[in-house]
Amino acid sequence: MTNGIETATVGEVPPVAKRPSSGTFVLFFRRRRRRLYVFTQRSLRQVVGWSLIFLGVIVAPTPLPLGLLLMAVGLYMVARDSVVARRMVRWIRRHISPLNKGLEALHPRVSKGMRVFIERTHPDRGD
Image (cartoon, rainbow, N blue to C red; front, side):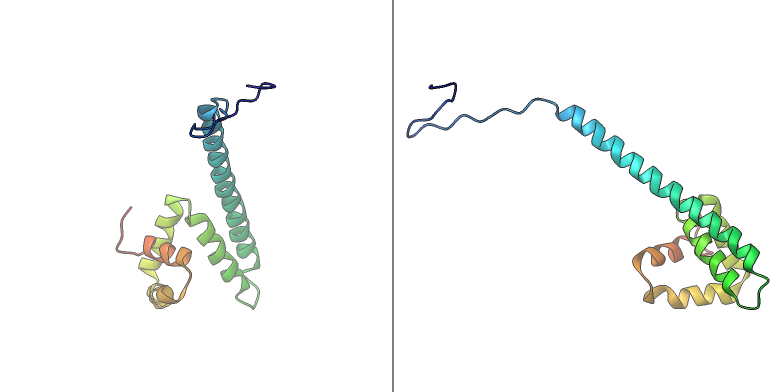
């Protein structure tokens, strides 16, 4: 040992520098950070979704069907995280059969997130 540095001779295993034992502490904060991220994402989706629904209700009387599109996108965003909104979409699909048929026709051609939404809001499925 020279100058506080350990060296290994031939045939010996060199010493391993030890890290401070803060594994539990770091893991705790990683979990907290992940929970905060998920909570923020869900909250943001809810705020944006309800804003789109509200804006869609305001724009609905115009000649273009833009209000219906805004309401549909807003309802999709809200229903991703809300059981009550999914029940509402399920009720709408049960009572408006052309909408249900249209969503079933779109099912194989949309992204995975939208496919999951269509499956979760199927009229025959319960919570």
